[in-house]
Length: 128
Image (cartoon, rainbow, N blue to C red):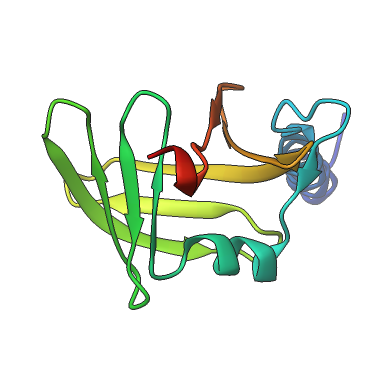
């Protein structure tokens, strides 16, 4: 029979391994040709800018960290965003919902990847 201290160490080690593998399992559905933006590139893309998607949704990133997403219907969700060291952009909405996304560049196009594996291309500014 295991001693309680040995069992506790085993349990803690197992939990750490599961958490570490879950963190590395997030591949963001990267495809061939995708270049994930690092923190600097993500900041250059987002801070103080509004990105428009092909469904006419708009993500507005304030230089002060405020964020809003305006749906094509005109409804808007508000929150705050932050950019992690790996370039992941995380948003905490006022309603308590939170999400993290990655932006990638592929063949000159910017694409938003969600944690669910969805891909949303950003419409180039000249196409607005």
